Structures are given as structure tokens and as C-alpha cells.
Image (cartoon, rainbow, N blue to C red; front, side, top):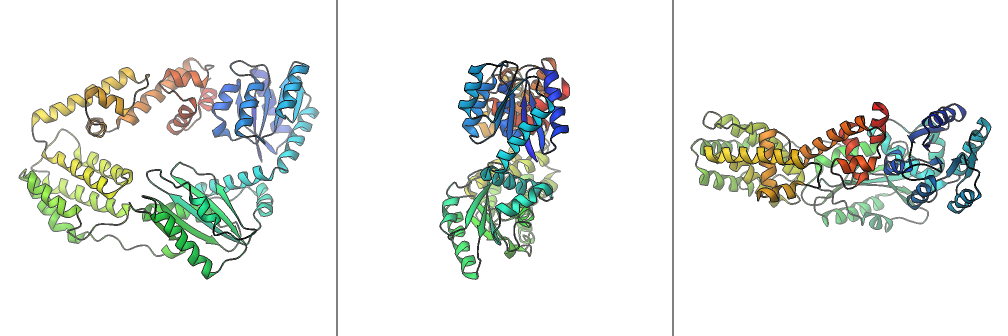
Length: 505
């Protein structure tokens, strides 16, 4: 039920403690076992422990320093020291840090069990922590299509006792999720009602769960108006609202459905909607009216009439033919329809050493979800389709050379503090243009290739030096922030650096 972190620099004692805790107290699960405090601190955002048991004398960062830094982030977390030294100075520092207990090695089974009982008792009286854990489980259940852990259901019912709930899910493809949303929500709450912030899975979303005593048609209209006003004031923000009148149980499934629907409803302008009002799928974008302009564009490509192509494309993107889509998903449907059609209709008259069809479609999809405004997207579409008119062998050879030289530069300098912008500066090119040339040559973007090289090198480094600190691994492969390195490493490999160490140690 509760997540425990163990830190002990003696491998034999660390393994012994981990096994003892598993057998002596099933209410605790060891979610991280470390041989130094520094690595434990770096991965604190992954393990998210409820309690910590740590040795004091350790390399890199001792237990006193570790708990001091942990308490800065998690002031209420129960912590205990395990030490081989009966030192009054250590005991005094432990008291000052507010630790739960101080055990001397070797601790007996009874002492370990008593300590865990004491920690559990403290945790069960920490309502803020319990509420945060229930919130985390709601989000996890939404991601895995499951339910709350049975042991947590009674606690959830005690903490979330209201009969009515409104879930507000805010999402933006460009990460501009408004920080002012909670203030808007609080203006609509009545006495005794509350809002709980659920932990987001990415920086692109915020999730608020509102516990309400009563609900009515008037409140529905009020919430709809306030959230619509909030959303339209923010570019790219989409807010989905969902209501439950049968307690907490449906919230996870409602959250999963909100996540699915916001992508369908996302626009360049702010947008909001109630989930139950979108039960019927929106009408599909009709593509037939665009067929004549598609044929004309393909003909201009075949004849290499660039000016006529650009004029016709301007007509399309200005809404002169069939209007402009509202939702990003419809933009994606329309532009991929044109991209596929242009390649099919002009393939006999246009040849290129690049696999333009797949690359262009990938570039178009990326820009649709990256652009902050419709005008930004339109500018990128014109640039992408302008590639149909790179007819000169010299132009193509120049692009190939830039791509190859950029690749070589990344391979030679990836351990340094470089980025797409600094690499583009070396070649005196615009970052977007260089990245597009690179992606067409190697089917991977420069930032992704840079991460690939760094993480692959980190994996090799860990296998060769399994006891090196995470901070030193990060610095070796060009990351200045070990916390960010840990995040990227897990995204790329599926394991935290410590998990990877343990698998390959």
C-alpha cells in the first residue's frame, strides 16, 4: 500500500533489508533501493515514496544531507535513520530533521516491524498525503483502464464523500496549460465544496476534480459559461468537462474519455465542451469539394509552374475552397489527403532521392500539432510543399551535404552542451530548415538523433561503470541537469537509470 525508499551503501545489508520488509510488513513496497543519497534524490520524482529508511554514513551524499533535501520538497514525509554508529550528534541531527526513528545496525525483525508500524500509523493520519495518493491512483487507473487498488477504496470513500463530482481536463498541444484555471474554479464553488488537483502525466495537461454537494441545470450553465470564457482567452487551450453523480468510481473512465476527446476537439483558438454533449461523433470532414484544386496543384507540380502552384495553394489555405477546418484533427485529415494525392498524381513527373511522401506527411503532422496559430501552420505548409520545386541537382546535393555534415557534427559533439539552435548557427541556417533537411535525409530529427546518441552512450557507460553516480553519467553524455537526464533516460529506455544499473550490474 505504501511506497518505501531504502538507501544503504552496503549491498548485502541493502538486499537483506529489502527482503525483510517484504516479509515482515506487506503494507510496504520498496520502490527504490540505492547505495547513495544523491541517486535517490535524482530519482525521487519517479519513485514518489511515502516514507524513507536510510543509512547515515554513505558516499556522495550522506543520510543527513539527503533527508534535509527531501524535506525541502516533501516536508511531511516520514523518515528513519539506520546506522551502525551510536552517536549522540547523529541522534540530535535526526531529531532536528523530525525523523520518525533512529535504529542501530543490526536491527532485529521486531525493531524493523515496530518501525514500519509507527510509519504506517503516521501515514494514515496524514490526510493530505492520503488524498494525494488517491488522486495519483485515479490518474493511473485512467491510463491502465483499471480501478483503484482495493486497499485504497475505503480511504478514498472517506476522503471523497461528496455525491457529485465535476472533472475539468485542460490540454494544449503546445504546453500552454493555463495556471489561472484553479482560481476560476474556486469562484464557482460553494461552502463545503472543494477542488483537488490530480497529478498530470505531462506538462501539456492539468486535471481538476471538483467535489460538490449539489448540482443543477443552473450550475451547469454557469460552469459552461465560465470555462468557455477561460478557454477562449487562451490560444490552443481545450477544456473538457465531465460530471459524475454517482460518486468517485466513474472518474477514472471519464478522465480517459476526456483525454481522448480533447485531441479531436483541439483548435488553434481556445475551446471547451461537456463530455456528454459529444456522445455523437462529429461529422467527418468532406473531402470531395477539394478534388478539383488537388488536380490543379498536381498539374502545376508536373509542369513545374511554381507561381501558379503558390497562387492556387493560397486560395486553398485562405478558405476560398470549401472553407477552413476548425479542429486540428480535420486539418491533419485535409493536409494528409492533399499530400497523398499530390504524390500519387505527380509521381511520374517528379523524382527525388528523398522519400518525400513519408517525410512530408510526418512533417505536416508535426506542424499541425506544434503550431500555435493557424497562420504559423499555413506558413510551414507552404515551405514543406515548396520542396516539389527543388529541381536543381545542385540544390539537392547541397541539402545532402548539409544533412551529412550536421550528422557528423552531432556525432562529434553530442557530449557537449549543444542543441538544434547551436548546431544551426554553426551552418548559418535556420533551425527549422536544417532540421527538415536532416529529417528528409535520415528519417529522424536532429533533437531526436542527439538524444539517441546520448542515451545509447549512457547505456554503454553504465554497463562499463555500474557504480558511477547518475549525475556523473548525465555530465558524461552532455546533460547539465541530472533530473532531466533521468526523465529522458526513462522515456527512451523504459527504465530509470538505477533500474538499468540493477539489470546490467
